[in-house]
Length: 227
Image (tube, rainbow, N blue to C red; front, side, top):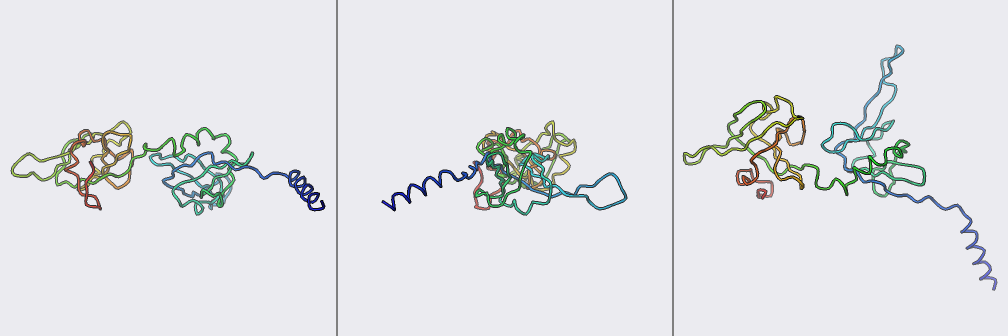
């Protein structure tokens, strides 16, 4: 009887204790970079920074999707950040277990924007390097370029064509020198031609005839070419 009363009293006390807040991961966002930037004031005679901010960049976007005060980049090295809501407190975490987090007061107002970047919604949209294309000749204009491989048996040189898009720098073709890097997302039909092994909308060209020419691409590290 004594044990039963003790059990009931313990249960009542546990029920009356404040319950811990329930943490919910609102969004898991892929990051291409997390950087720190010093900020400077415009008044006074001081020349040093008055503080710093940490900026979070998603792939294929030159502007940060989130900026937090302070230097926190060391907490975010996994390639993803986790937006976590714990009752009314919001945090940005560097791991799925939410053990390395920074408070984010502005996240509540940005929840729809942040949710739209969740990997469940961006899957297949970001471009990944699919192959390379080594060539020996280049022709065309600043907005359109043909990258030619050596001719075989006196035939015309095989080539692929890149065309500058609306966001591309007018002289993007001038940046190509010997090797083109081909990028493609799972949701795209054709490839994008870039002068460096990193997708950059201001420098890359849309390939208008790469589909069906995969046999011209250079072998990947595993000895195969994309199909």
